[in-house]
Length: 298
Image (cartoon, rainbow, N blue to C red):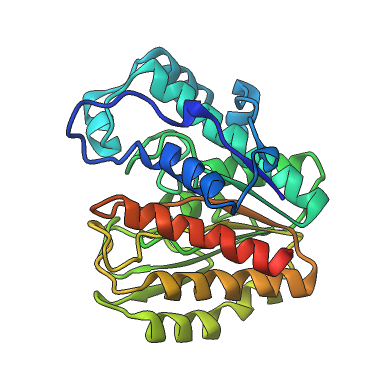
């Protein structure tokens, strides 16, 4: 199993900023120290090129963000201060998502220890998301005839408004979003299939709803599944408002992965959100996804 990671996934933030940028490094360290992944399974991705990013984003938006020509109101919506390091980080994260999808097509499963940036729009940043990695991947695979039908399973606690806005008119893309009904973004963009969850939803209710709705993804007969395995549904998450346990999250992942494995559908993993306090809860839950991936795919 190939998993993509770069030290460029981290970038400088002001002290006390609410985004837990250290989680990427901590996850890599925990996966290796616990023997969940070996050093040999980790690869450095190439940075996504301008030509790749503008498959989904406008040229003006890419160039303005690269050059720091960003309106202060856009920075407020993003929630991160602009820096060139942030641009580089965002382009590397997209590069990791592309590499993971290509590796999944070869090996059945692969992952990127970043990504799931589903709030970015074609010409706008939002909600900690600069470039929409899965929108870029979808366009890249389809335009290069590597996959015709792409399904996104988005189990981050926040609805993937950017995914739906960018890919909603793509008849060969299926977007399933299961998210907090009352959580950010407060103006949702309709996905192919949306399931809104009430605050406090626990493991039993969540897994029941997932079991009811997941078959629709596979009725679409995708050539590849891109999975945003966010762990901000965890009860300890500071932004999640749901009530799931780490065990419940692992069962969620097992349901998705087992169905992909059973049907022989390649699966590419993106990290998605996680904002627990302390952040170790988030990192532990991320590790659970990769423990399940090893159990299911061997």
